[in-house]
Length: 96
Image (cartoon, rainbow, N blue to C red; front, top):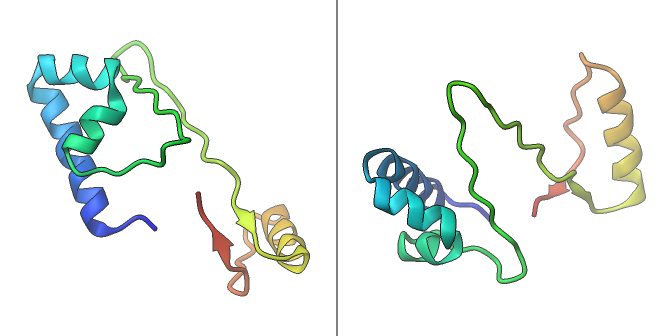
């Protein structure tokens, strides 16, 4: 589960990368170590890649699809996604 503390620590990583070029280079070369130093835990089996938006290039990161708990949840989610105005309040997703 991602906590407010996790988000705050990640925010500090981003802020520091903007103000400290050496930190940013270390973050790009060894993101897991730097994230751990800054209090951001990452699962051992997850690979981290750091990319940077610039004035001439922007990255769009697509999140992994949610893992659904049961086939009924998948049916509900698929029907909700088929309509841009639909809202599904019965589905419980497990993230990450």
